[in-house]
Length: 191
Image (tube, one colour):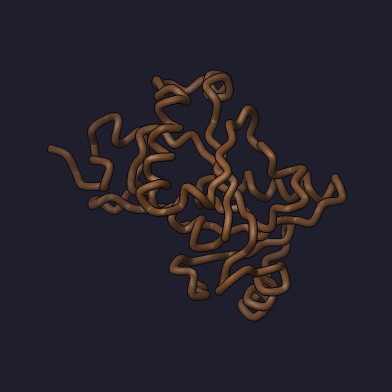
């Protein structure tokens, strides 16, 4: 596991080439690092339904990795197209919860919050983006984004893969588990 003073494990990918540790460190700085160990503009996205410790960690590490971040939240229309087996809170409520968290942590002023109407949002066309933060669960989506960027003549993004946050039972915390009342939002077992 590599640590670069960013307080989380990172793996950088350029399209499908995994860089070795020394290349990873050098590449982060060549890519336009702003401040100490931070990129300029990065992105993160998700549904952010039933906010929990995994979401909090993902967002915190996003702002550890970037000076500014585009935070994409799936729109109600996009959620409906996913045909989830359970209800999802409205975009308005999810936006409110994300904004509240970002404000409490002092990240709101460094945020550009956008609705996501598809899996990619602004990531495939933005010339300003330098990186994307994903969970282990969504890493494949970041690789697809980079492939699409390269096809469009854009520079691939540095991919920051954040490990899943585990509940007390050693299994990942998820909105589904919180909704089923297996664990609370902090990952503590219920019952």
